[in-house]
Length: 305
Ligand code: ASP
Image (cartoon, rainbow, N blue to C red; front, top):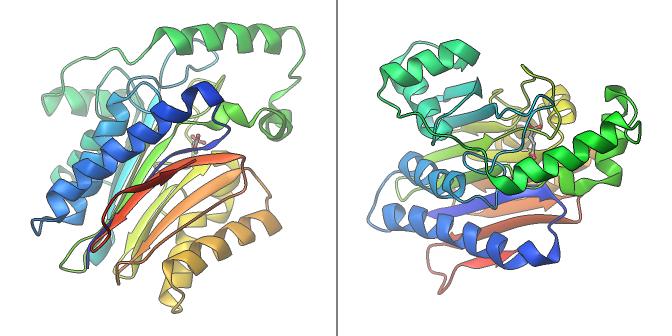
């Protein structure tokens, strides 16, 4: 039984973005269904779904990514293939359209797991990725206003980031992710992000770290969103995968993994999970996490915020 579940980031979605967030996640699920319904692979489905979200400026991934403190875009992405724990990721990559596809090239064409910064961009050129400017006007304006507040002292220091995100969960919206299981029982996960607003140049979040923002095993797959600095320390998607291995279904694993995060580092986050039996699950502790899913046998895609 196949299934696909995507997220468009945890945080707060402002009412004027409700429709575009719902439409965007549905479009991504549709791209995945096209592949899965004809017996295609979960790995291709999650990549296709995340590419749709990367192209949609509503979300903080690919085109529409948030800007660093210096006003640049540095993107992280990862893809994971459950059957043999394969993983490919890029961190701090600039000026390409589909970081998720570059992550897949790292997984399939190199013996490495994660390429960062200049090396990731050199590899992109080698793989024939065309230059692409991911900055959109809305993000530039947001950056200007947040940076002004920050410099005025309204946001204090970086160690206060957690408080900042608790007070302004809208900062987090937009990272994208997809998890899928195909009719062969293979699982895969993919996550892509511009990171967090006003991050320092060189900051790498949870997204490209195995078991933090992205993970897949023969038992299932998970993708998370929220403040990476918390999720990296508890490896939330690995926690979810361990719960699946213990026999929990996808929904219980998602809830238990988020509870674990709440009871340990307590950061703002959301997680999506699929298990090898075709069950899906999700949990979040932020006001919203746009998401959409489809399981074989359903009449229509379900989507919500
Ligand atoms: N997890 C991402 C990061 O910390 C941000 C997000 O999910 O919105 O880079």
